[in-house]
Image (cartoon, rainbow, N blue to C red):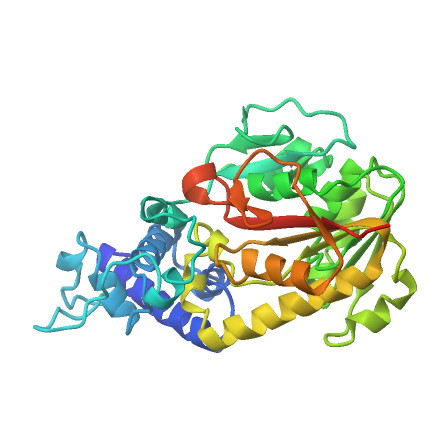
Length: 383
């Protein structure tokens, strides 16, 4: 592909990504993979160059641009490639719209937790490091990687490392997991012999981390309403040497019925709730364009409902841990304060030193902690 053809491909991809953001479609990585699957002529160098252009344009534009072309016009080093050449983009017309630079939609920035200062905003879009969690259930791996600065079970690899090609990954000695997620699992209070519930388990990243903290002793129920994601957990658990997980598929809106046998029995419930993902823009910058006020209202209502379900599962003395990969006040400290106000749960400090106090919980941010953005809080049910 010529440089101009690569630019045209990037424009087409950003158009697809914008449409997917409006319609809750596939993620940018998925769309890029599909695009090149249908264009076998593109070599690895072409794919890398186009991907780089796409994500540079996405990271630069805070508000959703009017088009992929407007997004790419915002890059200051590609203007000469708008030359009308075969397979390239048309020449630039006077007065064409150019996407303005920014961090995120203004309405979202206004709803960030007040602890997140202006100086921290650029870090929300910097590339995330490649972190893995050491699996304490397996023999410690010998790897050429740096320890993460905050997690005692984390390693950091250079960008581009093919982790899944490493023997340590195939042997279940490591799992890809952001340092912030590791800290949440370390601070949850999981211990051997517990009955623990991961209420929003997804594909099981935190489930496996909790199982390691439990020394693979006890019972761990991994529940989720996403069949596709949950179906990946059994294979991951087998590779990690985890044998205490009971996967449970939930019917949205009827979660309490599927968990009725656990009511009042759990020592620990983790609610890693669906959220806006504002703490993960480093990895998925296009998600800034997916959130709307209406979708955020639906998410906060779901978070509150899941917290109430988690509360019913606790036995006296049991722990409830709430986490969201969000930096929005209403998804973090707002939910924690509301739950404390409507229940008899007693807030407890989260046993991690990272982050900073945010109401009754803790807030981790890319700009201050170098992790994904997270809010985490913990309560104990009175005996």
